[in-house]
Structure formats: structure tokens, C-alpha cells
Amino acid sequence: MRQMKADIVIIGAGSAGLCAAYQAASAGADVLVADENKLPGGQLFKQIHKFFGSEEHRAGVRGYRIGEQLLEQVEHSGARVLLDSLVYGVFPSEGQTAPPPMGLIHQGRNYALEAKKIIIAAGARENYLPFPGSTLPGVMGAGAAQTLVNLHRVLPGRRVLMVGSGNVGLIVSYQLLQAGAEVAAVLEAAPRIGGYGVHAAKLRRAGVPILVSHTITRAIGENEVQEVEIAALGEQGAVIPDSKQTIAADTVCLAVGLSPMTELAWMCGCRFAYIPAFGGHVPLHSEDMETTVNGVYVAGDITGVEEASTAMEEGNLAGIAAARSLGFLSDAEAARKKHEVLERLEKLRSGSFGQLRRESKTEQLAAMCAYLEEAANGA
Image (spheres, rainbow, N blue to C red):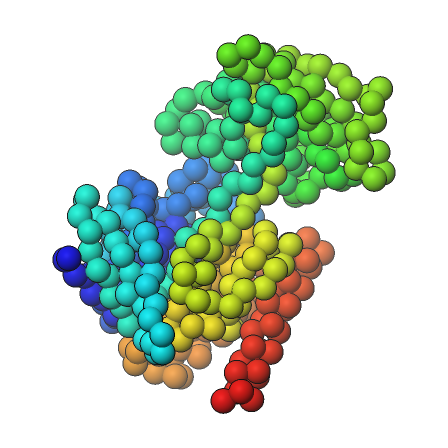
């Protein structure tokens, strides 16, 4: 079997992985980034909307432009980026103290991939919502619809029902309008919208109804979606029978949350905690983004689904920490860089909207501290 080696291997070339690569490679580390997709950048190149926040969080810059900036930085840093390259497994051995070897398929060939440090930035996947007719052509994830429209310039349908009013559902609905589709309605099972009010306001001004305490009960059609049946929900989340109505639609987009892609972290033997606000089971990690497995770091949505800006900052942290641990950054320089990143992260998680994520991150770090204390006492 062919072999590849690097000081730091980063799995995932999305926003978190690219930021980690830039930080580590510009410090002098030999960095290899592997991504199964044919293009780098992850979700950023589907995001044609402008980011919010402050100038330091790239406010006013469209997502795909941020992706272009990150790619340019990584190219100049000297990091190697392997695309269409799948890290299919991690193979720890008993008593191993270094990061475990990995299996990589690149250009149809199998490689044994070894690194002194591993950063897993695998991202998240869309959740699925089962209902009668959900397997009909025309039912898809909101992210899939966004890919069709913004990357491939293909309209997924003419009249779309969006299920879910988080930022993804609201933003993709507006982008479908911009592309020429009609959005029949946005449904939200909760009694209030889940995303930013500014996104919802744009849809309302365009005449799109946002129906809270509503859900889809079935999709109707022979070989494709032709109609959808929706219904109102009572206080306990049960369908109100006499509230059912049928509306015309040829496409149903599901924006019902994301789940971290944690398979490789499980294979590494990382400890996990179940945190619903972060999308389910997430790996425990320190403030430096290092997991319970020495030399294995995580960054981005694998640590808990948040925003792209947060993923970038976690990538920065992981890259800085991994480079420092290998001696490519002094303790003082790493501490300065880390302080700047943590200040930006604190701003991103501030305010009432970020309170739940801030509390969940505190819970995650507390669980990590408890584990370390337990391990120390056991030793």
C-alpha cells in the first residue's frame, strides 16, 4: 500500500478545515488537507448572501467571496489540498499514544495516511423528515436545492414548499425566489421562527407566508410531487385534524436541522457527550479543540452545528494549537493568536440568539474537564 505523511492532516476542506490549514501551514508545518468533494470550500460556495456581524467576522461579504479569500490564503501558506479524496477509516491500536493511521483513497488509489496531529473538520449532514410521500421525486434537503441553484444554476422546481424556518430554510427560500421559483409557504413546527428576523422579514415582504405551528402531513403525486397536505399543530405538537389543507407544489425542501458527521471521531475512540442544541452526540474537546485522544483535534460543525463564522474560528484555534504542540509556534505567539480568536468567538456567541449555543459549549467544555480530572485520578 502506498503511503502519505504530513505533520498535520486535516480532514475536510470547508470553512473550518481551510482556516486550520492556513494557521498551521503559515506557522511552518507540513499540512495536508483531504476532502471527498471535487471542489474545496464546503458550504461557503453555496452562500451568495452577505454575512452578518462585524468587520472582523467579514460582515457584508458574500459567502462565496469568503471562500475565495480562504482558498487564496491556503494556497499561499503552502498547504497541500487533495480533492476527490476520501478518508474512509481511522485505525487505532491498543496502547497507541500517537494519532492513529488513516485509510485514504485518492484518484482511485489506496494510501496509508500518517500524521503527527489530526484535525477532523468533517462538517454536518442534513436531517431527514419521514412522511407519506417523502420518497417522491421533488422532495429534497434545502442544502441540495441550494447546491442546484447557486452552484449548478438549476432550478429544482417551480413552486416550492419549505419545511423549517431556521436560517437555512429562510435563506434558501429567498434564494429560490431570486432564482425565479415561487415559494408557496414556509412551515415551522415550533410556535415561532427559528432563524434571524431579518431573513424572515425579507420573505414576508415578498409575500411568502410563514406558518408557525404547522407541519407537512403528506406529499401527493404519481411519479413526482404535485400537491402537499399541511396541517396546524396543537400545544402538544399533535396535528389538529380539521386544520388540514392541500396546496399545489412540485418541490418540498426540508430544512429540519443538521447532524454532525462524527464517524471518524468515533473511530478514533474520542469521548462524546449528547447535546441536543448541537445536533446530537458531539466529541468532547478542550479550549484548544483537542479531543480526549491525544493529538486528535476537531473543528467546525462536527463539534456542534453553529454558523460558518464560528466554524472558521474553531478551525483557527485547532490550527494554532496543533502547530504550537509541534513546536512551530512559541507558547507566547500561540497564546496571543488564541486570545484574538477566543475574543471573536465570544462576540459570535453573545446576545440572546447565541445564548443556547454559548451554554451548550460551556457544557461541552465542562464535560471535557470532568473527563480529564477522572483520567488524572485514575492514573
